[in-house]
Image 1: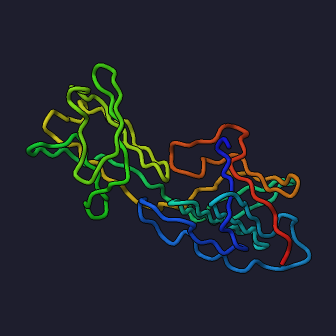
Image 2: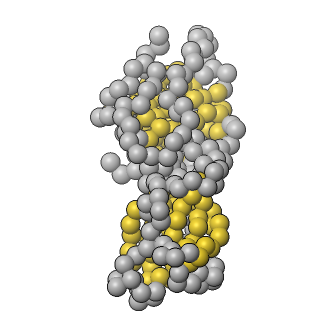
Image 3: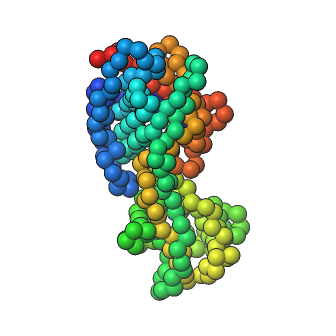
Length: 251
């Protein structure tokens, strides 16, 4: 379904709970209940509760009369949330996340030399414990590209297939967070040393909706724009619908 988020089966009113769990970076309570919406007779037609239902996904949004919004998504191992304010301009609304979330990210830490050292090891920035939720993409001197999940003890490509790694990129797949491309030689890496890279959780699971614009079409609230709902490697195309929700009848 392109990049439009379809929605889900375990959605009950606006009380969201995870439908499933699996191996993913721990996050906060992204599926908490939404508070009661304000009731009024003289208000914008956008005010109300919205849902998107599809197989194994739960999602809800509330546009409150006071100009605030809340959003929740739960699908498999992924829990996301967003909150902030909305403003109406004619037939559209624009969202602003408040507070603006700090994205999770990978950061280069240091090099470590030890016997049988792996090429790369990923650690939580908060406690230096292994971060086993990312994959590595290596480009070799001969142009060969190799990808693999990085286990807790670290990972190296097969030296027969990649005698000289020259660059490294990391990716966390659930929240779609990608690192910079690291030029190993420029950073001082040599065979026998380990590139230690840390993962900063920051506001993992909090989406930045700033700049998303919504419109109503046949009782569906459709959003375009913004910087994408997930991570930093899934940016929407211009004019692409990134979110669709159905307006619920007043309670």
